[in-house]
Length: 306
Image (cartoon, rainbow, N blue to C red; front, side, top):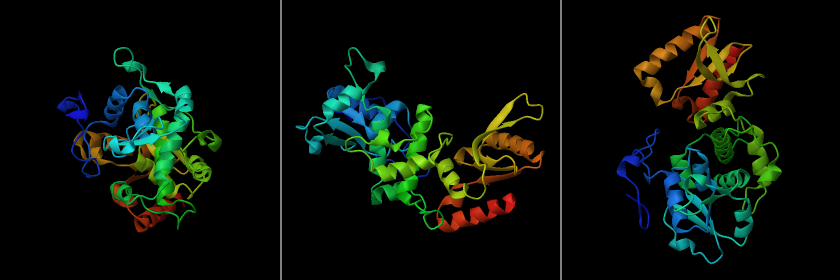
């Protein structure tokens, strides 16, 4: 299948036709492959936003979003492939000076550049900060601003992006929004709100949403709490979220939890936590679909917390 004019990829590298949530993909070639293919043909350009994030190893969201590419002022956006959002900019040389190099493809394939982490995050947040009907349909999150001030759908998506990018990079949470003040970057107020909510321990967008839904119910909420066997010799898993002192634990169950092997493992984890008097809640997508569902979940968890 063609990734770019003159560049083909094998069919066995394609993504599934639908996402885990059942959304039919607009494209099946991995985002990182598409970004690299474009940069092979245009080595003076620089990947940014979701295009750069895919090269950093981020997997959430990058397959559905347009891939930002920075180009010289004379570039024509209308001639770019449909999966590319081309940004002609007079600051291309400044970006090139700060850009990272994709060392795995140097040599015969030429030099591939993508923006530094702060610029990459800033451009992604700038993208999701704007209302977009198509994005709302494929990337559905509830508006929680009636429960918690400021948690609009756009802000929640921004926090999910920030969590996912920090997780992919394996770095500590960015604390100073001033580092995201780059050309064509995110609004500082939006950036400050998102960074204030960022948790590098979130391993999925659903975990991020769950944390935002319940974190004000009691102090001391932690992510990725280790769960050990009784004798402490083996790590069974990490609890997505929980209040250890209150012995209340939350797990987000994706589709893979329906598999027999995973169900057996989940039973062992449940037994380990309940043996010490713990309360365990397994959360599914339906618990987070809208404000009414979130309010019901909050009531249940609040009751357990006493």
